[in-house]
Length: 319
Image 1 (cartoon, helix red, strand yellow):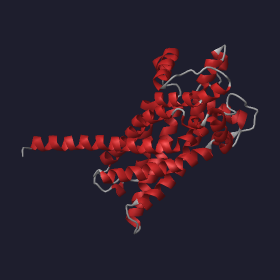
Image 2: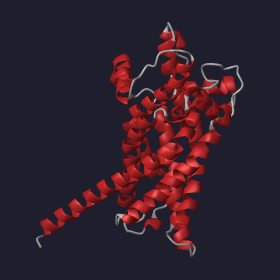
Image 3: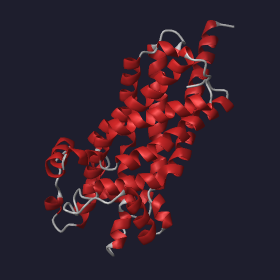
Image 4: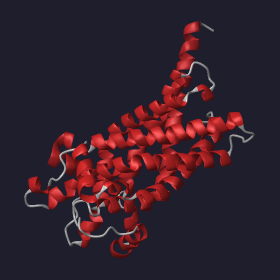
């Protein structure tokens, strides 16, 4: 067979492989997101509580917040904003997983994934997470805005959005195209840190276990590695997540205030970070850590086990 045909076939297989893995990662993320979403909306409510409104009130517990949402807003309100969250993962997870593997394969001369060093893995996760989040940032903004709609209903305020698409259009009309990327800096900072911890921990731990122990590439190994990656990701990313949520939720207060300029508290991510530390203390940066980890642990477990299993069933190589 002519060399150019061989090259074309190899290139076609490579593109097909990337597309397949993109789809598989999105499917696994959709399953994980749906299962654990109530914990995400609880985390968002905890992080915005005592931020702009009710700064002098005592922070409520995780289970109390979850209970109040279900009681006052309805059980299905625990999944309010799920649609943009899933749309986000079709962009975010597909890109972050695909980019990480592309960087790993490009950086590794041999096919031996175990030779991919820890610092290279961390850097790859950092870059892939930041790129993916920048592209998906509008959907993250819409998700946070819709998660807070229940509070407006409890105050007898009319809903701002009828659907995910209506939310996108409304935010565009009120803030312009750049407004869809409000909060993108803390968003990307969080995603970069999260993926640096998540992907590097899972990848390096898994291949260390496979190379240095008798354990196999099975569900037990995947489960153990996912638990560690979830803990690492939650610990590293929670402060950036709090800052991101506060900045994005600020839009709701600016919308409801007679003078939006007066309702604006944070000038940027650094200003928000320092304001939280100065007015609420350093540990306020870890407000919502428990629901973050309680959500991230099963999310990570569900995602990685599903992802590895789906790859196996479709004939793709193990991550």
